[in-house]
Length: 255
Length: 247
Ligand SMILES: Nc1ncnc2c1ncn2[C@@H]1O[C@H](COP(=O)(O)OP(=O)(O)OP(=O)(O)O)[C@@H](O)[C@H]1O
Ligand SMILES: [Mg+2]
Image 1 (cartoon, rainbow over the protein chains, first blue to last red):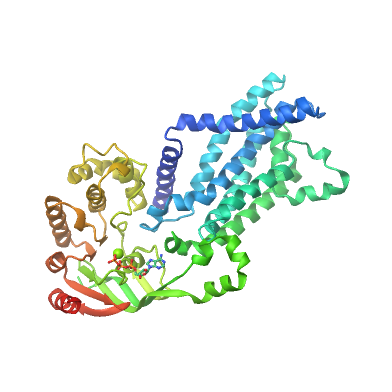
Image 2 (cartoon, chains in turn brown, yellow):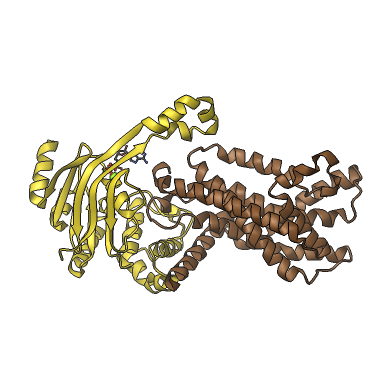
């Protein structure tokens, strides 16, 4: 059993090294990219909503960043998921190994990028005369685990299905873009009109993203949101895993 | 010696023709009835009711025309394909399928591909590192191992591929047509290595169009024709049957 775990760790390590090498050629640039992208977005939204439309939210730049960084992890993984099996066709056709490790590695890698970006959030906290809270010590690992499970579930679905419907890749991009605007990231959930409020929690990403922001900005972790997002992430994972299980043995046929 | 390590029990393999599906969701939804129909009905049968056993330490050859189903058989043994009917049982650590052209990861260097393949095959990173030098030495690619393999020639790729699997202590070695592009020196080296494997009791399944190689190495040969095993037995007899048929 121990040997098996060791083998999995080795597999994940090698696959991650490979992915970083293939995608970024150089891991430091990859890191800059993972910070630069959400920061650029934050700037765009800041100009559009704060400077031009004068939205009434305190510390809007900080508010944006606290939501955009975790979101970026989710959307990067899901968008990349459509290509992960195609990009590894040569090894899938040759060796029988647990193929789900490939999307797993993808999500893991984006998670590491997110973790490495947390200091940027801290920097912005200081700029706005706030500071990290002690609750981060348990809050961050808890939310990391939940988001990992959720993202992995979505990725398994997208990556497996995309082999059979090759235009799913485009749909995934449209899907993540739509989800982005339906999730309270650039606006607080309190601004949603009263009659649509009940819709907020239908979106599986809402409780999670709101939890991240509350944790980063105020050091608060709401247990109810935590439980709702955990439930969603378990569902997302189970659906993804079932789809993967049904389709995985056909991968080598269609690649 | 007589213990079977690869068992095919009435194995059939048919490939669904996924062309409607790979046309995308859009196509699938716009032609829904046709799409569902094609899901169910259009299958291409590559192998039908094949049964054979390969014993531990045996060298088993597979011959047949292009498209006969040889690579499909190897894919079934490697476990990357699943039979549509029947059962495939394999006992032991299998090498990655060695095929032509279908390389490893083209952006990675030779060394990184060695690591990737070794770990995928079931070895730990430490074990692969220990064998790294030996593999590079055998492949005679010392000057190129730090370059991405997209720059390699097909013969160099074959060298790298063979050297990797040959040194990773496989229990079952699957070789599809890889010697054909190696130069004479390397072909000889490979054959010698395979002879060594025979002595040490490694099971090998060897697909080739070179009847000379097949005749020299294999203990038994299977000839696949029309999706079924047309002949199975002594190399001499099967090769004679096959070459007679092809003329
Ligand atoms: N993924 C696939 N989807 C659909 N059909 C396939 C697939 N792979 C192989 N086939 C079909 O199965 C048949 C057997 O193919 P296979 O690759 O096993 O032949 P082969 O004996 O290895 O031929 P060669 O000597 O040219 O290597 C071929 O007719 C091929 O068209
Ligand atoms: Mg072939």
